[in-house]
Length: 415
Ligand SMILES: Cc1cc2nc3c(=O)[nH]c(=O)nc-3n(C[C@H](O)[C@H](O)[C@H](O)COP(=O)(O)O)c2cc1C
Image (cartoon, rainbow, N blue to C red; front, top):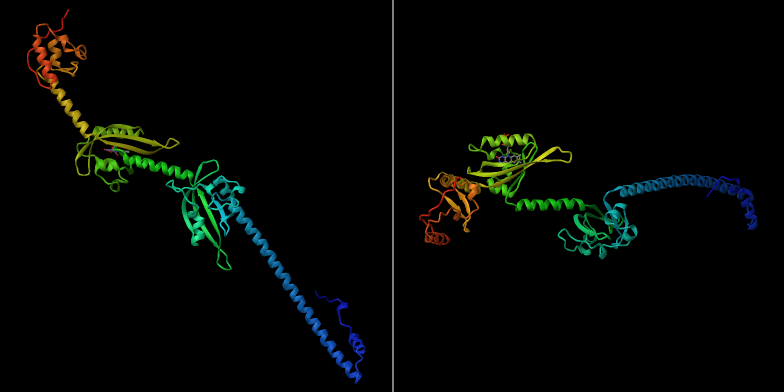
């Protein structure tokens, strides 16, 4: 450090004294003194120049110090900002040193992994306590963890799903991204920063949906979902199989395309009324497949409401009941024929218990249906039928053969 202080200025007598002390021969005292003066003047100039240079240097150093001070303050502010951003993140972030050891993390990492700072500090991906698994439930070995992959390849890893066990034994599913951090001076991979989101809940919902999808695929009933305006949003495989329409052809449409000339107008009015009053509909309706053939559709339509009770969707369940409907129609026709037959008809089961009698029976015997159904036909016996007729009758019937002959029955006694 230099100063303008008088004490630092050079004394002109100094050189004269020095010269005397050295006992220099005295050639020409006047010339010598002139010379000394000149040197002295030059030294004075150099000294002034030095002082001014010093001043400049000093001010440059001071400026530099101020710049460094500002940069340090900026760095500190930046670091604080990064720290508060990191601690405010809902995602977990952990940083692995060059040797793979975890040496930094944020609070969300502790929360998601269920680990304290002490438990995280110093862990590596190879620690068996992670008990990590893949989505299919198979083990996720440490040497395949995303952080290790980044160390091995130098490449970022993204969207890796991993299940890790917390110390309490529960399983947490995380979606991981891992980034390599290179040293700026020599581009050597020095760190890996891993960020991860807790997707346990998302995965639970997704798994549940997948299960519902599988169930919808597996069932034989057609299932249709429409929005509140009755436009189709989705249909399962069975709906495609029953109707012959591909999902892509019907999405966004109303189900009316299944109806045709023979579809009952009354049924359509009932559907319309039920849907307008946001009620369920259940009934049979004649529908048309894509190829124009008809089928009987046992249809149920249910409204779906959200938590606030607002109608959001309808679900339609379709079952092809054509065979059952045809069979029951046939049975209805046959029973009508039996009912209207001019002959007396009695139907028993194989234990000879009467199950059906027709109208002619009721008229001829005087017994009501309620009086004979569930009874043995022997109640009708008059005692005049030869025993062998009964034996032949039951022999034939138990062998599945028809029998015809005469039985002498009695009418109900009327008091
Ligand atoms: C979820 C849902 C499923 C339906 N499924 C059928 C169906 O399989 N067959 C059919 O004829 N109509 C079906 N409909 C009924 C028609 O879309 C429509 O409501 C009916 O034709 C009565 O309304 P409209 O008078 O406006 O035509 C369904 C409706 C909804 C909301």
